Amino acid sequence: MSDHDEELVSRDDTSEHSSSKELSPSIAETAPGTQNDRLDLEHTLENLHECSWEDLQQKFSEAMETHAQAEQELRDETAKLLEVFMTWSQVAVSHDEDRAFKRFKTRMQHVQNSETKLENKKKHYTNVVKAFESALALLEG
Image (cartoon, rainbow, N blue to C red; front, side, top):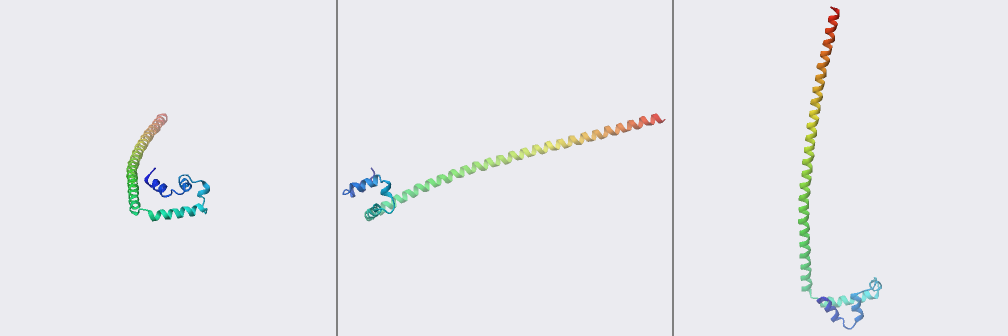
């Protein structure tokens, strides 16, 4: 049992029933608007007068420091994750740029090959036409 629990039990020696309520309250005992709420409020007000405000302030400060440290750890972790994400996104962009460049080169080669084939066909058909013209000239002459 903690020091706080021991203080509660030692202050409330006259009523074992109320200390058992603190340890294990039932649903009916914790329902709003019951007489137990008024008793708990009175009990809380009595404890409020006996409370050590310096201890409360110290506990609050410690809790705030703990939460501030946890928050800073979360910030650090988030910053690291953001750095990983930025690296990943840069790699993805770089990869996409490489793929786009390769596609461009492939298209350029295809166009150049198509132009070469077209030029060769043009030369071939020109030669075929010349051959027919020569054959016609021989037949006429």
